[in-house]
Length: 298
Image (tube, rainbow, N blue to C red; front, side, top):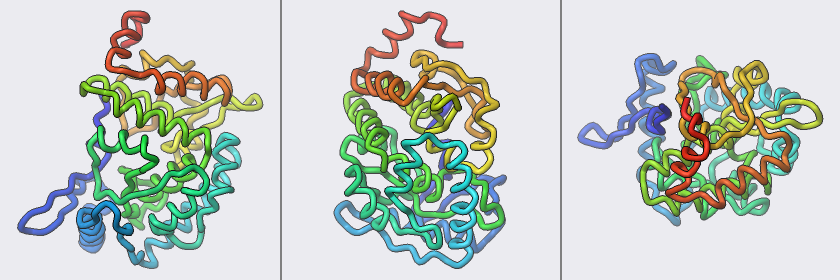
């Protein structure tokens, strides 16, 4: 079963300073310079306090080149595979493609569109804080960039995922509203089980959601639209209709492409069904859904 903490390399602070603990299979695990860089960026995020400007990261030329490569490769794929609302929002946000924007620059572009703004995160943010902040139009984002040896791959959410994926998505009024509704739902949760169920539905919608548009299956999930590889493969996956009971309980492996995706029949259906789910969600929703669809947990 998905656990939010699996997505991020653990960050600790102690006698040795701030340390990001990369897994042995991480592309930067044996790169001393990259590890030091990750520690430096994480330390800046941990030192940040609400109300202050986001830390200014002076990105290296290698980091800038990673950004340029990903922007160049993904822009063409978005035209082919992203839903219309995402494409329109990306055009409105107009992120620079030749240089990495700072979080405050992204916020300055995003706030006039939908009110969302970015704040820095060193790594994992507790579930209740991350999702709850969406109700206030706040998105917690990492600032590190994936390793330069593998510019089109990352084993964890980096700035590219969180800005190109989520930033463009939140520039859409419709998807911004879904994020806010999810945040309000998280604020209503009083149990960890309910919050986890909500996070799973968020995973299969905001992160890995797809929908039918003009006779084609299109992606809107930030996880798909920020992944050079997965964006080419999602149409070959098992596509099921939206089923919240199943989405909230199904097992899946975050280290592989998602083999099961849930689609809405249209943008209107997505907004009606997912919007209503988030708007009406409460602690008793998971149990109510389980009772009404006993075969949901497979």
